[in-house]
Every structure is written in C-alpha cells, then in structure tokens.
Image 1 (cartoon, rainbow, N blue to C red):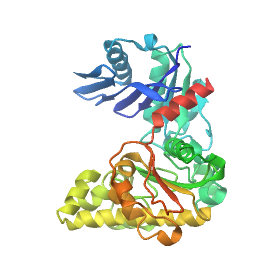
Image 2 (image 1 turned 120 degrees about the vertical axis):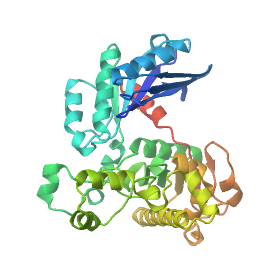
Image 3 (image 1 turned 45 degrees about the vertical axis):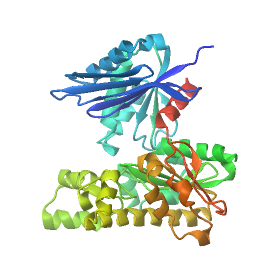
Length: 396
C-alpha cells in the first residue's frame, strides 16, 4: 500500500514554508522555503533526499510563490502529482472561539477566517491568502486548516478570562487563546510515549523556547494554562517580543512619548524582548556576548530566565506537582545553559538536572534529569509539520 503524502503549508506575508510529509512513516521527504514574496528579488530553496535546489527570481505574489514550489519539487525529479499528495494541511495562527479542531476548508471557513483576522493581524490575513491560492492551484485534493490556538480551548474559564469589563470583552472577543498549541500537544504526546506512560496519567509542563516562546501546563493530556494570551505577545520574554508587561506602560508611552498604535505595536513585537534589552535576539550570539562580559547581554539573559522560572513555578502550583518538564523549540532543544538555569536549585521540589546529560549535543528525544530526580526532565524536538500532516490525514 502506498504511503499517503500531505503537503503542509505555512503562509506568511512575504514567505511560504512547505513540507512534503509522509504522516504514517513520520518524516518529511522534502521541505523548503519561498521568501521575499513581492520584493524585487525572491528566493526559493528546496531540501530533498537528492540534495538542495535554490532559485533566485522575482516572486510577484503568493500565486507565483506556490507555482515556484511546484517547479522546484518537480525539478527534484518528482512532481506533487507524482508524489501522490492526498491533502494539503495549512497552519493557521488564530482560530478564535470558533475553531477548536482541524477543519476541512470550504468557502464558509475562509469567510470566517477572514472575519477573525483582526485577532491576529500579523498572521491570519497571510494564512488566508495562502489557503485561497492553494485551493485554486490544487483544487482536486481536500484542504485542512490546523490552528495554533486549538489545543488551548480546554483551558478553564478562570485561565482564559481577562479581568476587564465583561461586555467589552464579549463584544471584542477579548480572552486568552494561547498559541504554539500544535507544538505543545505534539511534544506532550511524545513525552508520554518516551516515558512509556499513558498521556492521561501524567501532568506536564512544556516549554517551547524559540524566537517566539511559550509555556503550558498540561493535566492528563488536557491544557489547563499557557503563557501566551489573546495574542502571541503575552508571557515569556522572547527574541523581539516583550512578553508580560504592565498595561499601564502602554498608556504611559502613549501619554508621555506620544506613541500611537502602530509605533507601540512595532516596539512591543519587534524591538523588545532580548533584542530590545541588548540589541541581539539570536541566542547563540547573545551567549557569546555574555561570555565576553557584555552587561546588557547578561541582564537580558537573566531577565529571560527569571520570567521562565516564574512560569514554571506558577504551573507547578496549578498542577499540584508535575511528572515531567519538557524543553522544545530552537532554544529549548539546543541550549543547555537555559535548561540548567531554568531548573537550578529545585532539588527540594524533586527536580534535578544531570550535568552531562544536559550538556550532550544529541539531536534526539532524551532525558536530561538525574537518576534521583523524581520529576523527569526531557528534551523533545518539536515537529509541527508532522503534527499538522497527521491531523490532516486523520480528518480526510
């Protein structure tokens, strides 16, 4: 029997990430990126078993971008048709209160996603454009949307509700939604499998740490809290995002510095976080600066870890104790310093990191806690594309 193949698309305003995934076997047979859409010079790269194909060309719009995807895949020796793509899975950032499960796309779904765009103005409009273009170019297969917010629909109302005027909140759909849900769900399932435990029997903290970062508390496979809120801006310190901030700071900057919406948006989403504190958001460069004695970099690192520990502590209380803490994402998977410092001094809580295991550069699922640690500490590489492909194939 031929393995079904799913094309996974993640459409941004000026880029499209794509993977051709065999969801049952659990791996990608090819992956790539189209970037600088709409600019004077675009770039396409496709990594496949036979090597890497790159193209530099003008990519006028998302239609041209998806045609470029078709071209580079075919140039590698096998077109999308020849791969036997049975469905297209689309990552969509925000599903609002409407979408809590993967959904087959039709015109009504596209209309609702467009209506939800104000909740994620930096992401959803681009996601919708990618879906519309893909449906036109690949009309003979079903298209499925998988939402970053879906996993956190199980949060109790107390965790999802902001303490503002209830009528204002309802009228404007203001609540905590959470993001990175596909990653948190996938990693929590892999952690249970790694430990040989049933998902419903264990309580977990998952730390997705990359340029964007989020934490979640998962009780018996069900998310009960997460650090991101109505937008991906809330929570942990990130590469360029501030994370948690006193709302009064925004009012103060509006009144005292004359900052309006667009400037505040740019400040908090693109000029804050690690970059705002020390001018660098790449963690490898940040640690080099720390090693060289840069005081701003050291402060940025300390603020990052402080916020991370605060969320770990909060979730330990919410869960009433935890069985496993898992690190994932680019920083979580590759940075032993963050893992060490985030969990330092927690031996009294049954959390002990083994130095040698933590320092290992292995790129696989592994345990980094000491043998005597009551709480297991794991590193699990995330794979959101595989998770999207599997949700897509399960639905269609």
